[in-house]
Every structure is written in C-alpha cells, then in structure tokens.
Length: 541
Image (cartoon, rainbow, N blue to C red; front, side, top):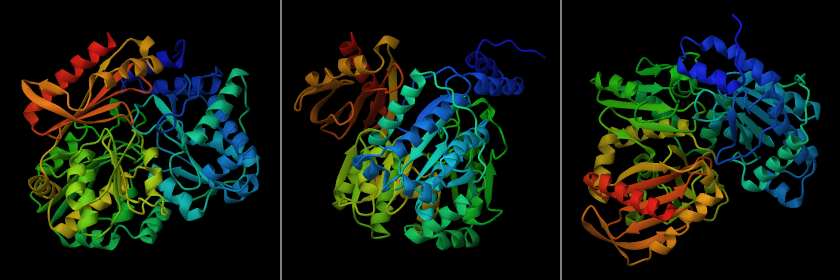
C-alpha cells in the first residue's frame, strides 16, 4: 500500500491515533528519518537533546551532533578539559567512548551512525547495545572511558528519541559542555551540512549490567547479598513494570532468578502500547492490582521508565512518589547505615526530607530543577557530600553511587530497606510521618500563549518577587498564613509559616507555567492550587 504523508509529524499523528492498527507505518517513519536532511535547532535541556523521530531527530542531524562532539574533542581549551575530565584528544581516543540506546524505534541504527563517525577518528568505541542510563554512567567509571553517548529521550512518548552526553565522571553534561555542543552543531545546521553515513568497522561490545553490578559492589552503599537473601528466605512478592523499556531483564540479573518476582510489559513494543512511558500514578495501576491480589507478608511494586532513570513505588497500600521515597532513603542511610553528609534535593521537591534532615541535624542543599545540578554534592571528593540526591520527578541517586538518576538503585535500596527494617515501605513511611509530620505535595500548571514561551514568560513571572515579601499575609481557603521565606534559585518558592509552600516556575521548553505545591493537610490542596493560579494569572495579565 502506498502512503502519502507530507512529513513525519503527520505520519506520527496517524500512528499514535491507533497504535495497534497503524504500527506498520513505522516503516514510513524510517524513510523520513533517513531521507529528511532539513536542519533543526539543537538544544540540550535538563537531560539532553530530544526530538521527534523523522522530523528533527533524523540520521543526518544525529550525525551532525556527533560531529559537533568530535570537533569539541579536537579543540579543547583548559576549562573544557577540566569539565570533560580528560587531558587531550589523544587520551579521549585511547580511553574511548561508550555508545548505548534504550529500546525505542531505530535505536541500533542511530547508534551505528554515532559509532561510525567516532571510530573513523580513531576513537575506541564500546557498544553497550540496549542499556539503561545508570548502567552507562557506571560503565564509564568501570572502564575508565572518556565519555558516553546515550540515545534516549527518557520518559518521552514513542515518537521521540534523544541524545545524552556524559563526560568522564559519568554524570550529565553541564552547560559548559552542552553550550559548546549546541554552538558547533547549530553552526553546521546553518550551513545545511550533509554528513554521509559511515558504518563502524571496529567496536567492542560490553556487558553493562555486569559492569554496573561490579560498580555497586565496589562502591559498597548497597548490600546485594543481603537483598538476595531476603528474597530467597522471606515470604515476599515483588512486581516490576518495565513499560517495554530497557530496564527489562536487568533486575533479574542483579537479584537472581526467582518465582517471587513478576515482570510486567517486557515485550518489544516501540509504541509502548500507546501510553506515555512514564512512572505515573495511572501507569502504576497494573502493579497496584497485581500486589492487591497477593497475601505475602512483604510486597513491593515499582514502575521504571524506558531508560531506567525514573522510578515510582508501591506495596499495594500506598502510591509512593519520590517526594516521600527520597526522604525515606535519607532516613534509612543515615539511621541504619550510619552515612553522614547532606541532603540534596531540588526546590520543587517535598519538604518532608527537610523535616527529617532538620530534626536529625543533617544540612540541606536545595538546587535548581535538573539532576545535573546535584553533581557538586555527589562527587567522591565533595566537601558537602550527598547522603541522597533526589527530585520530585522520580529521579534518585545515593551516597557513592552514579552521578545519574538511577532507578535500579531505587529498586535495590527499597528491597534492602525492607530486609533491614522488617517493614513494608508504606509501614516505614507511616512511622516517619508520625515522627516528622505529614506532607502532601502536588503538581499543577497553566498554559500560556506560545509567543510567551522562554524569556518573555520568565520576565513576567519575575514580578512575583515584588508581590511576595517575607512577613506578608496570604489568605488561602479562608486560612490566614504568613510568608516565612522566599527562595529564588529556580522560579520563586514561597514557604509559609506552617511549612506549606508553593513554587512557580516557567517551563524551559513549553508555553506553560508549572506549579509545585505542598500543604500540611490534604484538604488544603485545592485552595492552595486555586490561590497560586489566581496570583500567577494576575501577574501574566
């Protein structure tokens, strides 16, 4: 059958309208991805460059970004050398670059485009194949590689692909690196550069999950043998939903084969069954249902996104997001494993962790949104070293672990938590809420005119600072509250005298204003959301 789509965007709309009936149209997307040589604007956001496959994420544009990275390698100044963690291009060639991808459409083919260009320059290339973000981060350390390129858009819908770059420390690339990649790539785009396909002649295939396990054992924060023993000996049931992502098969290699573990959505499905493959409350329902049918003493369920950098938890009784789980990990590592350091979290994340940290005398570091902002506290030589680093968007890493978000670490530490405390995670959480107080986080937002996206929106929202002064009284749902403090590290965060708060910040990529809200009682949430929306709309008008 002949198809007549003007572009990949139109074709994707047809595919996503009926993923079962129109999956065969992916062959058309492949043609667009190969034949479309139109330039695009390369922007590395909080977690790499992302684009729609066949529209802006094309084979030529992937080769352009790879070429920009190679040019960066060849023309390194002193500041960039320090950021990359290398001495010169010769060292990069010798130490090599790891290339991997999640299991989205055309992942291996895009990887070949990257590896061919790297290998042509004499750079040692390690091919990870289908791998998760934390595996690649740990593998850089274990192989002493110079960098890694991970072709994934994380939890974005099926029509997206992505490009992450990690320097020699294994963490997300900072802006001092990504700004250069963007600049060089966009210069090539402006010249309508066409870069021919070069297939890699020599690459070394690596086993990243084995390297990751060795990394965990070397770092020593987790006790893998204790976790395996718990699964073997206790009356437990574990349910893991992979949402057709690259985390599939990985937990069984870390935990060992067991009939006490159930794995959901492990089949190949480039379209993720038509759902956004994110660890959302809605997507967690399959795991919740599976756990509710079981009578085991210990139960744990998780859902992980396609590249294994986000995770959400349940034991069948409660849906536990990172807002609460990260705080639980802080308490567990400090109290049960005697680790000292600081709590690191984004300003958009619940203050439940703050309450625990303050009572235990643990210093708190709040950063702008984006996991890459945690790097200074996660380095092994950091003066203020993180006990745990986490953000409300379901990303976590811990003491001595990878500098990337790590869903596998989250799964393992939840199991060790159960093994050590003898409690299900909702039981542990309830005990912490009794001791440190309950917190109720929520997210909301409003859309604005497309012309406002970016700098104009940020400028308008900056006027909120004038409205919110310490000591000012606010009426929220008829309740009188006083502004106790104001944080402007990313947007504007208003903390009230009862420790409830709200954060207003512009989206970096969409015409939206995002609200992050937390109250001390669930019944106050609707009133707080209404108040924040009203105040924001007033400023925008």
